[in-house]
Image 1: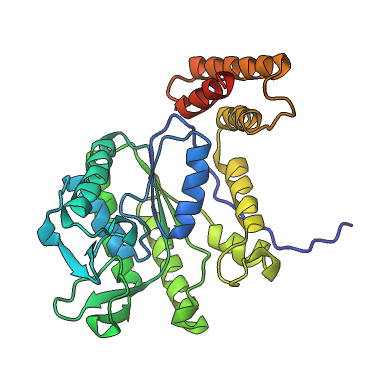
Image 2: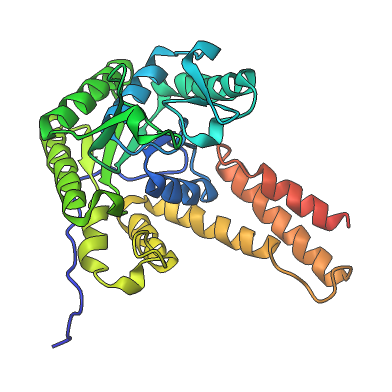
Length: 331
């Protein structure tokens, strides 16, 4: 009998599978960004974190509502701190020295996200923490603190009911606009050690209980992916963590990504992924003799593969690969 050195996690049965042609929206913690970048590389029609990274479920629910409303920001929605203009709802990636630049960047992303809402087939929400920071003066929950002084905020942990009701209301609004959309919930495996180990466990437990309640409330539209459980049980070893012992290592991210491919991709999506990886590998190849006829024929064959794949799947965005191939051919 083979000796097992890990505890395998059961994945939900009956969940629909992903395909590159299905418009997706990914929102949430930096783990959502990690997986979203890989999906984009695999040519999925994927809008990734239109607000930047968001950790708490109330800000995620608010962001979904703003995108459904088609809200546009003005300079009145911003505040200035240490020479930069910020939005309480947005990550620091949007911050800039000029308020008009921040508003333009925010509204460009929100306009695209709003237009995609009615045709989305997947919304993936990764919940990071049940702790929220409220502005002391107004009580408003912020999506990002932007390194403001601690006295600016009041920190609290949400209850299971608060998480469930906020996300439930947002999902109901989404389904009213797009009855065909499916929602995936995940809990980020990244631990928030600044909260303390016990407090982090309470936070993650709150999110897990809320996710379970939401799955029971929307049994046909909402599914839970056990990413958190995979990290905690299948990968229960510090070799699967980065040097900070908090974030998953590249090995762990590869493991989880391969599980998503195996469990969540259609057969055709996996075949497209393999072709895209072969094209990418060919374009990244560094030949010994770049000017040789042999390398030119190699690039021409690669360009032919790109055109054949795009002809078979016109929705795939292969323009970058095409341009790279032409650039290499014309050197």
